[in-house]
Length: 175
Image 1: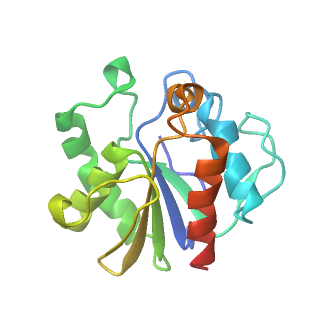
Image 2: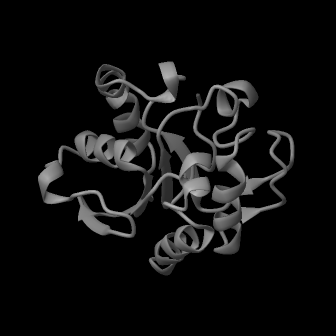
């Protein structure tokens, strides 16, 4: 699954993996599944989009100074990547990071994305534990953590739109 957004982005939003009914089906990250409206609404509210998100790759949405990508590049079985898949995709994540010359911040959506990023950067997980709303300084980057904006997390109340907007707002304050 390709990343979505400009190659000179200063913010990378790092998800888990393409969803079978979302990005895998539509060809654009966080498009076609329940996570997309939450993610793109928060990005829009904080100036990281132009145009309107309508859940289709041809809806005209553009990202501003922001790129969306995933820690795992293909659809995992049971919608949860194995450790081997995450490790196998690490070189692609490292290459994505290296190809963003202006990168200043990463928003990790969930623990798997957080840990994949830290491993790709060569950082110790124990030094930067995942916690919703946390901010870490890692390899010259501001790394922000949020629970994933999945349908499950939103429906159970583990993550609310207000909680998610607060994290994206903290990210936006870095710029």
